[in-house]
Length: 99
Length: 230
Image 1 (cartoon, chains in turn green, cyan):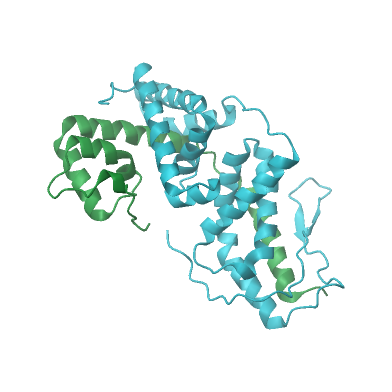
Image 2 (image 1 turned 90 degrees about the horizontal axis):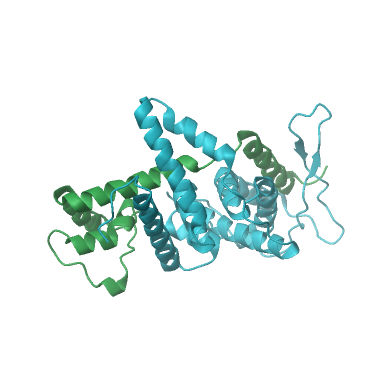
């Protein structure tokens, strides 16, 4: 997964050194989604390891994300296969044309 | 995820218009087979063999690996699981017709955009369905997934937590719920969810974060998570 920068400009440039509680709370969800640049993610991770309250908040959001992921119904393999065959038939027709 | 590098040169026009392959139901009730419908039409001259092979290769390399993701997202966008397959089928057909205009860079985002357009035309053709209540099948699946390898107390707590999460999700305004479903259930990135919804990534981010904060507050109110710090 490519790490992208999703630190909104209105938040200003992140200051050097460890993140503050306010920064960590602001960036927590983007951090848990893996959407921060590595350097920003490191600052947030450093804070979460040191700050009990923010660490606990991160744990709650991780549980929330995990519970949501558990709700995702797995795609029915038969349906996937049927659609793949449909796509293959389209591609085949493009490559060999009609007989 | 990385974009599939596909050597692909866009072709100008003159490709036979794609029509859906014919679906033949089997009499024994097993999965139907797709067979290619006749492709040549009097209006469109046949492509040179190389061009057709190239299009087929691009389609197979870019589109077919994304079918499972498309089906999941279609399930999130349609509410009715039975519509998802039809929607993905229409997406594949539209993708095939448009593949000569695709630059090969971000197949998933491109396909999600096509899926969104297909879903929008379907919604225009008929009234959207009303929101379904909690999906019993998904809840049962969540139960099975969460109980594997856990003690009885943990099972009960996880079930309570998951049930509260499910309720909180259903209570979110639709705009927020869609984003939460695309990112946390369907595992799309912010940019991919933005393609699926046709909104800027910043909008995805703000709806997602506000939605999760609401859900988090409901978890605290229900007593299955500590009170939040904000």
